[in-house]
Length: 326
Image 1 (cartoon, rainbow, N blue to C red):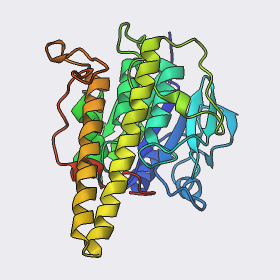
Image 2: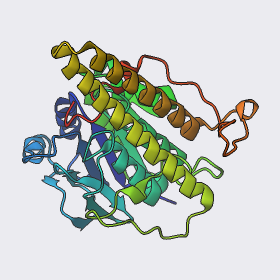
Image 3: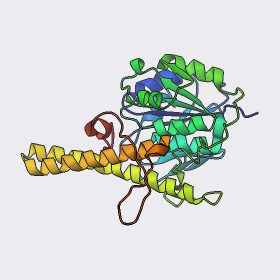
Image 4: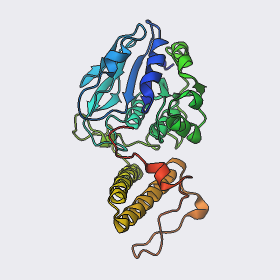
């Protein structure tokens, strides 16, 4: 029987306070490793490890380029590097930023789901937008446990609410209660991963874009054509969101300079890219409704599918994408 021995935690805006409260509630004999990604600016150094080390009995340290998972330790991602799980080890990656972030919460969540399966406990804390939501779907699909900070308790409710909009978490609690919950869950028996299409390889699996130390990731098994197409679609989704965020920033520059024509053009580009990204995201997470599939042809008289963009305006979905911190 698999034991829950890997805890992955994601946070962004308002996350330092939530992380401090969570760490203070963890016991010294926690039978699990705790890995933390807080969205940080890529430049400079981070004091997060030293800050969290003041709370609770567990040692907190910044991640090394490669190290084994050790129960009873808290490992935080450094600025400018993705923190990933590869089997029984943690590794750092210099792969491309995801939604404008490196380290990125989704990268940690997906890699943990892929390599640790139902042994993973995922924790989503305070943050804006929907970062971490797709990665949490991967954890749930692998049979892992999903824990979300109560949105009303979070300084920024966007990231917790995004998870709750995609699936039903196993636990929704204020930060002060998450540490004791993890202590109770860690080391316990985990249910086997469910069979079928909802596996980490089918949902939000883009680990190959986050190669170790910037090098290409080599899959352990040969990919099927469907998996290759899915990887390409997730790459397109990420690029569209980043370009939408860039267009929004350019729109702001044009507005400040009273360049109305340029402002309108960048506003249209931002909305177009955001809507396209929303359609791709729904397609990848939910699939294409069969009654809405239209055959594709090279002549351009059809499309490979259809989807409904997410609720909200383009600015709601993309504001801040590509920025170094939010």
